[in-house]
Amino acid sequence: KNEVEQSPQNLTAQEGEFITINCSYSVGISALHWLQQHPGGGIVSLFMLSSGKKKHGRLIATINIQEKHSSLHITASHPRDSAVYICAVSQFPINFGNEKLTFGTGTRLTIIP
Amino acid sequence: KAGVTQTPRYLIKTRGQQVTLSCSPISGHRSVSWYQQTPGQGLQFLFEYFSETQRNKGNFPGRFSGRQFSNSRSEMNVSTLELGDSALYLCASSWTSGRAGADTQYFGPGTRLTVL
Image (cartoon, each protein chain N blue to C red):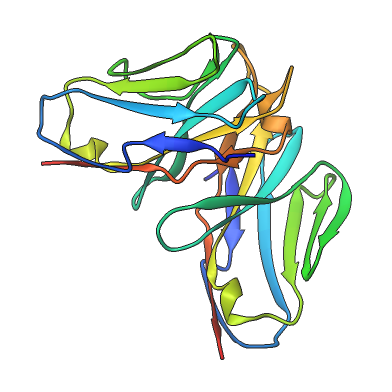
């Protein structure tokens, strides 16, 4: 079982719809990151959170530490939101060095005009 | 402020060769992490450097190595290339004096390596 699970793997929606992408993890973490990757490979960090909720424009990220679950919401979705959204967790290493990121497999979002 | 830059952007090598990839972090950032992205395995952590010291490494064979210079620029090297090393290699920098994973990471555009 992967340490970080995302759902759904693929999501197609109409412009304007409310989008939710989920991330569950099975390890202890110090922080959770939501990343966006557009075709061509560039990755942008959207949020880093360790508790509660963060909002940036039409994007909202929440995390429930007790349930080991996070969600990324997009309100009033737009075709330019089409991208792969990746959840990553920062784990304390067991016996060496600093923390590292462990990634989910990503959710491919397509917004149709 | 300039973003993270990686050179080269594209590279084609043959099996058995070695390759060196370069990453220049955002000015003032002292932590540089390297990641490999493949269609089959997704994104995987390679290693992280801070102040010229490797602080953490992922589960990759010893053919993968890296270093960081005093100006925070970093290089990664892959020796004896295999077909499976074909991937997008991304570096990310962060402003941290401690915990790289608990700080926002700024990614470069990546180097796409093809091994024939």
